[in-house]
Length: 397
Image 1 (cartoon, rainbow, N blue to C red):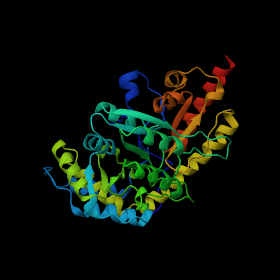
Image 2 (spheres, rainbow, N blue to C red):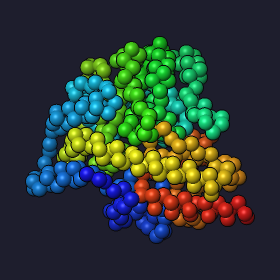
Image 3 (cartoon, rainbow, N blue to C red):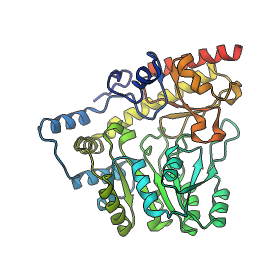
Image 4 (cartoon, rainbow, N blue to C red):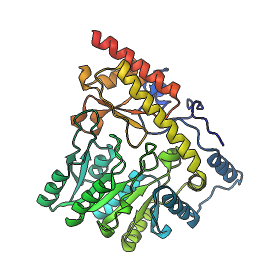
């Protein structure tokens, strides 16, 4: 079945976080949102059909998550990533960050710390802070030159873990949001070996694991079994892959049975493992039937990301952008444009386009922006045209 990603239904009037907030909050009626990480593509037909079938039964009462959903996730991991997952090792969550919340609460003591890499997806440091756990930071090494890539600062990670025994947990983003790295097996094994020697819990957020540049291969932390042993937990979901974020469904994969049972008890008591009945049906359909749709969607996204490279070279000289190895998010270094630090906040009012400001990922990244390219080309093109025109005017002033 051919899938069309050039056209998307309007999300206006659906209480969309991405689209509807401008009229209700900002009193604006024409803004292109290229910020929050959800797609503007319709879900695959099998997902719609599965929800419609469940909706046809007029009772929407309490429901248990069937084992077949865990089996579908395990089969998907095997087909897509070559990883063998025991369905019984999975605990359900209503979202990856809710899972992270429960794990920090469960595994990190009140006087212990969490190590986070910068630039970081903001909930990685906001979640431990909300639980009154101290967060300490290490920064990725910025690339030098167009052909270079962002790297983990393994020496700094080693130094911090060796010098501070109160660090209890390391949050690994694999693949990396926002810089778009798809870590190699060698890189993963090196950082996991360091954490293993220091007895650190590693939480690997692998929610973007299916959105990989064609020709590259994702390596799960689960594929490195000799390191971290039972202290490795993987968080995943089909919500990025299949655009299901509003249905609130994700999973945690454990190696240790006792730890899994402890977390499952916490998740059940807090309601985190009580999935929406439509989320169950949607996720089952997606993981069972989504291979072809995913491949076509990723190919379209990476055509967008390649187009963006050409656009920037022609219209935004000075902006540094490398086509990401993973995710549908472009990380743009706009510092050479010489704009004021708050330019990203002004764009929606003055240019009618919104990006995610880099400073939200760490104070050192003011002047960067994150651009969501999981949308029809026409949407991306209009947003970037507005940005380029605004930059030309702003620099001329």
